[in-house]
Image (tube, rainbow, N blue to C red):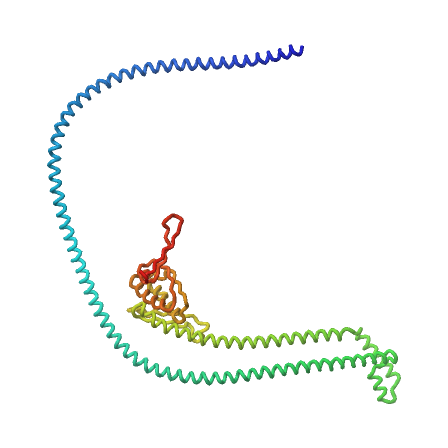
Length: 469
């Protein structure tokens, strides 16, 4: 029975699969029928299109026949034109050869004319430059003569003033030497006074210690006396003064003595309890007072020492500053006219009475202009003035190396030439390394180093020794 049921189930499953397959076949049949209908419609459309195409093709064939007839006519015309073109080409070749010959002659004449015009232009430019240069030299010569005369007059006045200044300088130097001697004497006296003061302080400390010991002994004696008074009061109900009066005065009255005793008792009661730690508190406070006093004295001494050191530093700093300030001013008078081909420049203190707290003003007078501050100059003049100041400071005490980063960028060609001349003088004492893009500065260098990128992302160093080249 189980096998029959199993076969029955298997048959049922097969039946279900067959039903599914039958359904799929029916669906496929429906789709095929719909596809067949669509194909029939497409066949009808294609048949209509075929008819239309056959009609168009017959029209095209007629048009092609007409075009072929036109082509035969055009070919005959083209053959006629070709023979004419060949004749014209031969004439054109001959004409072209003549044109080439004429162009060569024209080019030759044009080159000769251009050379003549360039020569004439150069001659005219040279003549104009010569005339301008002559006029400028005449004006410069007149100005030089005027400046020479004025300079001669100023020179005489300056010589007289210089002699007076030298005399004043000698007097000041003598006064300074005398002041230095007095200062050394005062310094020695101060040192002696400091030593004496330290000795006095030492003696004062010793005396203070002795006074403390005496006060301690006095305190011990006072305590002993108070102890005796207390014992007398406990035993006799009398004070020490009363006992002394009783011993010194004869015939004391008992009532008076009792009244005095009662009065003393009231006074003792009003006094209250005795502070037994008062001596220790006093000693602790006295020791703290002594330490604070010593610290205050040390601070006062340190402040005075610092004041003396500050005065000495200010004196040395002022001397060195004024010496360097004068040296920079003298070197500036030498460098500035070389860069500007004339003119003057100087440094001035904004507060001459207090040089160490004063600012410095840079006063410049370019050739043909008034004396003014550096901040009022143009960009190129400002850059050239700054270069003159930097070179003046550098030349006072040159270092082994000097590095400039595009310092000649704001300068024109004439100023760059002057700048290179000063740079060569600096190069005699120091090794100069300069970053620049100016060709004149590169020409003045002894060696060139450049970085190029022939391939993207790969830098390459190129060097050239111009001295060997």
